[in-house]
Amino acid sequence: MALPPTFNDMRIRAKEFVNEHQDDSSERGEAQTFWNDFFQIFGIKRQSVGIYEQLARRLGKAAGFIDMFWPGVLIVEHKSRGEPLEPAYDQATDYTAELSPDDHPRYIIVSDFQNIKLYDLQTIGKQGEWTISLEELPQKLDLFGFIAGYNKQEYVEQHPVDIKASKQLTKIHNELKQTGYGGQDLEILLVRLLFCMFAEDNGVFDKGIFYDYIYSRTEEDAADLGPKLVLLFETLDKPINERQTTLDEYLQRFPYVNGNLFKKRISTPTFNHNMRHSLLDAARNNDWSQINPAIFGAMFQNVMQESGTEKRRELGAHYTSEINIQKVIKPLFLDTLRTEFEESKHQFHVLSHFHDKLASLKFLDPACGCGNFLVVAYRELRRLELDVLKILYGEHLGDPEINLKSIVKCNVNQFYGIEFEEFPSQVAQVALWLTDAQMNNEAQDVFHKPLVRLPLISSATIIHGDALELDWQEVLGGKKNIIILGNPPFSGGKQMTQFQRDQVKSLFPNGTGAGVLDFVAGWYAKAIEYIKGTDIKVAFVSTNSIAQGEQVGILWKYLLEYGAKINFAHKTFRWSNEASGKAAVYCVIIGFSLEDYGPKRLYEYATP
Image (cartoon, rainbow, N blue to C red):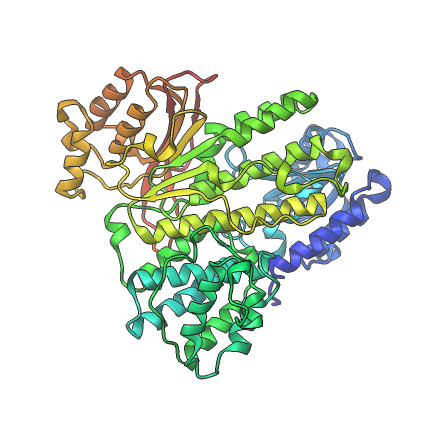
């Protein structure tokens, strides 16, 4: 059986598909060509899987014809441009109800050319409904991975590119560690190598420049590879006009990066022939631009686990899946912002003020790990901003006078994190820069002009420290336009160290009963104190133990007396993460503030 095409191949085809079909409008005249070409994106001939105009009975109605039917997998219903999609979905479900169990599809897609709506019938009403515009298709191909043969959930959360890259990075890590090169120097080296490989594939550096430097400027026995990497890092940290004129001309081609990423000096690693080959293989045989920064935490956790380090697990840290991150950010702020955008997009001045509002928001994850929550929140913020820009500058998308750097206002400096371990905090910083580069590419695709923010002037504020000891106001520099979110450590009362238990008790008045609280309760106490007198919204993923049993009367009595209002919550669900060796943990998500925000929402799951 042939392997499915790579994500990068599909993305290239999807861009061609969008260009080819952006003006289609007639269901009768153009729909079948549209879907034939759509399936070609995923390396599938439509006629090998699906039937057009399949006669089918409809629930309680006269028989009709399914626009495109893939037995057991998919029904497609298509309308002309501008027609409502809800009737098309109702029509598809009527057909579905009358099909035999073997032919019953998992997915329904409805479209009017301009918009594509996907329904996953196994999860409908939870996370199983998505609407994208045609032009968003290249960035949202993960939703349709099942067509190419990828299991949908695995495709969304752990793309094969990420898996392969993680293994190669682990191999480089282990080979270096076995030679005695380790500790902080090894961690910093890995982060820098990751940045360089991403930068040359994503357009931040010239294409292939890092690979070519290693291949052409170092010896096959790798005797000079370590010193030349250190020289490269020093070059990336130096403005071009301050570099020696005698510097290797190849190194002169590298841009000035700044952002302190290459500032700290590390000891020079030594490589051998095999280790050099591993690095070249990693740089050459991955498209690092397609790496998902939202799972960098899992990638680097795998590196640490491979080397026998379990420190973060002892601290109770968990790397949250993107599905669970969306459960937090959508009701916490994203749904509200999307609604506000829809209400303001027809009034230029109102929309312009809304754009300024997006750029004024600050986000804090006080247990950020490798930055998963911050990465996803930043990506969604940038995509919302891009929707704003399409309307504000829609008539001038190709205008050479438009300066993308000046009109793209949202940036990584709106994001703050606190992380107990130094290595994950370094990864979080870089993951946000890489996300910025990916979002800049999405803006380039719309405005047809480059947007590269080098040297790095803006950066996220990621503090290496103990969130229960730090003053959050000093981290953020104020209390205005703040959103707090995250997944604090899950350590239960019986797993906590005495120091951790004392920390939590110290955050509650007189420590009354706080000795039985889980470690995560400390973040609730810090948050409620920080948001005093503000309209700040907070949402945390937590073990469900804080919402049942003896902890409720202690933790929630304290929070409610403080004036906490629960704005939304997710009832118990099974937690899934991006790391290997997934633990069976049952969680809740609780969103709260000191003000009521609209109707209360409770999300419930049939299978926790």
